[in-house]
Length: 89
Image 1 (cartoon, rainbow, N blue to C red):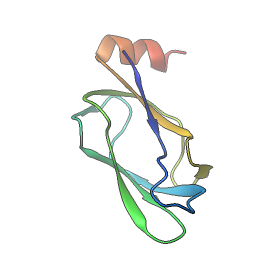
Image 2 (image 1 turned 180 degrees about the horizontal axis):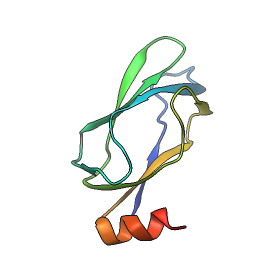
Image 3 (image 1 turned 45 degrees about the vertical axis):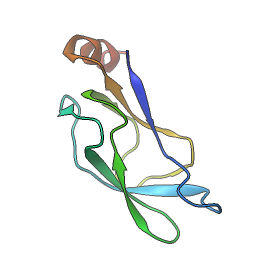
Image 4 (image 1 turned 45 degrees about the horizontal axis):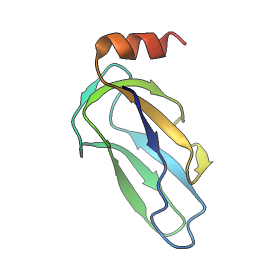
């Protein structure tokens, strides 16, 4: 089952964030809690962790792109077959 990686709200006044860097590529295997990206907010840079183990199926937000809290940044699939199916969409 695929899991969305969503930009969390790290502070009371946080409305958006900018993806500074991705530390993974599509097709990479990740474990739960692994740092997969760096996100800059108005006040600080935060490490974005993978919410689950799996395969990075799609990265939906480019580096240096600013998006609202709650935006889906990436999709992590349960296995390589599911990742390939998602990437083909």
